Each structure stands twice: as structure tokens, then as C-alpha cells.
Image 1 (cartoon, helix red, strand yellow):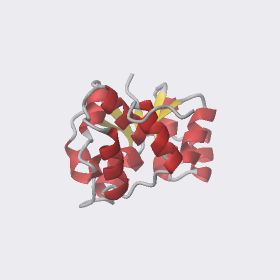
Image 2 (cartoon, one colour):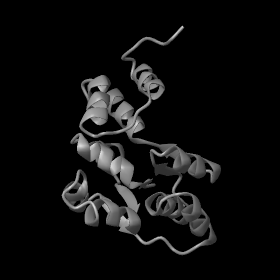
Image 3 (spheres, helix red, strand yellow):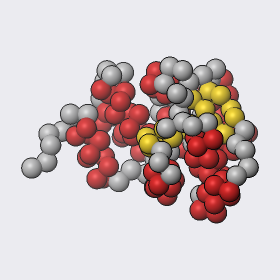
Image 4 (cartoon, one colour):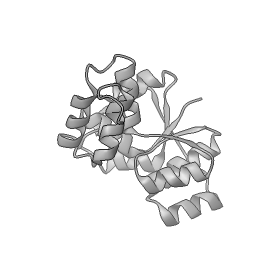
Length: 167
């Protein structure tokens, strides 16, 4: 089953030239709602992700049907996050790719599994597609202007066996 992704994952991975990790992790492709397409490709024209997402044949844009769940999600989240979660439910996907804590919490409460940009990078390191997670995370924070707390940074390096477990 294809996962549904929000714009943050697409933009962050594009900013560090690693959007390819999504197509490698999910060879059947990913789904995005129209709100994410608008945010990344149309409104984001000229920014990281716009051209890469527009050209990616493995990304399928889907319409999110109106629902009370979508309305409720929109009252708490931005349109892209709300539509991504609603689309995952609509298409009976079990996985949604989001980074923002409120969106992650909402998706989890609705029974969806959640994976974010850092999780994709950890997978890439474990699959030997990245030579070093630390470099990718540093680039994500620097060039990608991605907010990453020191606790998440350390946990990610531990998960990729780049630092020993804490005692």
C-alpha cells in the first residue's frame, strides 16, 4: 500500500537532494492530496521540492473527499496536513508521512502509523543509501532549515548506530 505524504517531508528531502529516498523506500510510490501539490508545486514554485515533486512520476495526486473528519482536522491543522491524514483514511492507507507534532499526534489518534523525514533518513542509512546520517541531519538543519531538537538528533544517531546507546 502506498503511503500518503505531507509537504514537509517532500520539501525537506528535496532541500538536501534526497527526495529519491522516498521512491526507494516506497517503490510503488506515494500519494499526496491536492493541498500538498498546491503548497509544494504551485505556491512553492522556485523553492526546494517544487520542480522535483512536479517531475516525480512515482507521486500520485489525489482528491480528498469532503468529510466530517477532514473538517475537524482542518480546524486543528493546516490544509496539507489535514488533507494528508484524511486521504490516508479515505484510501485505507496505514502510513502517513508527516513531521509536525500536532499532525503526528492527530494521525496516531486516528490509528495511522507515522513516519517523518528523520525516519526516512534513518532508513536510508540502514539501507546503505546514505554514507552518514550525521551529515544528512546536519545538512537538513543547515541547508534545509529543518527544526530538529537535540533529543531527536541524538535518538536518530543511536537508531542508525552512529553513536552508542546512552547508559
